[in-house]
Image (tube, rainbow over all chains, first blue to last red; front, side, top):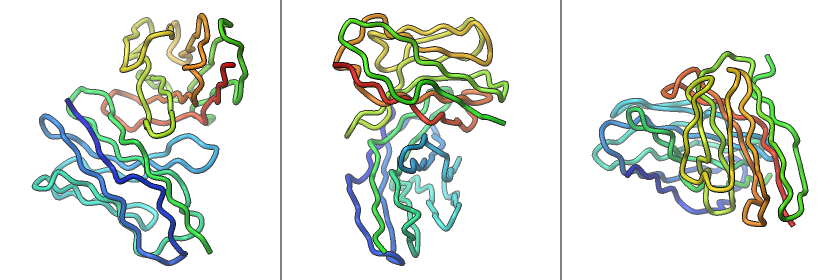
Length: 111
Length: 112
């Protein structure tokens, strides 16, 4: 079945540091890939997505590239801010199947 | 637009009690779903609905019932709460299964 594996947290960084959160997937067919963000006390929000190989999703300074050859969709940001502190979820959907989420990675950014 | 709303925000139940978690959306979305979020487990799908009158089970449906009498509302019922149902519950909706899901703010449930 479809599955998502993302790096376990928590991740703690200083402001302006470079962020990478790894995500790899297993899926049948050609899945769409997503990153969701959950700020403290809130529900999940879509951060970015990519629907086919080599697509790059980007939003709020975050980027992720759909790499079919390595079945990966790593999330990156060049300079994190305190306001980026949140839990980040990688997810996929293949065809008519439901969304499948990773377990989440908690990011804390210190000033 | 209110988007996806959930009530209550927080609830404490005793084992064996029943309750209904409310979810409503004002975006005329056909697809709605319920997830539970537990530490180290990510989000797991409980039940979902592809339109009024149609519901189906997700990954962890046991102990929960749903109904979809209108497009707007998708309540989740716990008939006899158990401590294992202590969790944070999120409702989500989207125009179709394939489109972006919008999440509510969540209901934190504690079963003693």
